[in-house]
Image 1 (cartoon, rainbow, N blue to C red):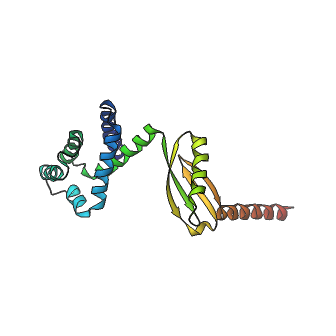
Image 2: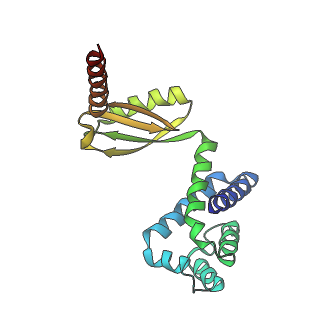
Image 3: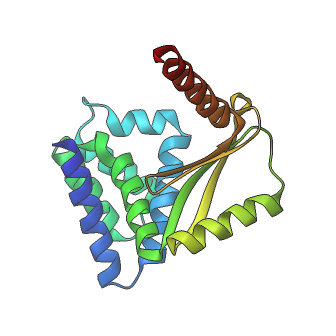
Length: 185
C-alpha cells in the first residue's frame, strides 16, 4: 500500500510540474528538499516524529522553505502530515526524480570497476550504452576490488559484466560441467 501512495503523490506532483511547464524547476526543488532532509538528521527526525503535530511540522517546513519553493510542495507536505504519511516524503521526492529522468530520457546506471577507470573509458562505456538504449546515461561509479579486473554495469534491468570475477565464475561452471560429463561416460 505504501508503494502506491508514493507513486500517486510523486505522479501528481510531476503532473502539476508538466502542466505548469516547470519540470526542471520542480526537479531542482525536489533535489534541494531531499538534500535538506538527508543532510540533517534532526530536521528529518522532526518531520518523521509521530508526537509532533501536523501544524507544527508545517510551521517548520514554512520556516525553512517558505517563499523558496512552489506552493504545490507545501500542499504535498500538508497532505502527508495530516494523513500521517510523513515517512513517505523522501520516497516521493526520490520517485519524482525517477519520473523526471524517464521524461528526459536519462538512464541511471551503476558502474562498478575493480579500480578507478579513466574518464575516457567511462565516456566510451556511456556512449555504447546510450546508443543501445537510446537514452542519456548517468553513472553512479563505485570501485569494487572483488571484481579483480574489468567492470560491471547495471542499467534499466540489464547487467553487462566484463569483470574477471564473472569470467572466472563462468570458467568454473564450464569446468564443473565438463567434469560431470566426463564422469558419466
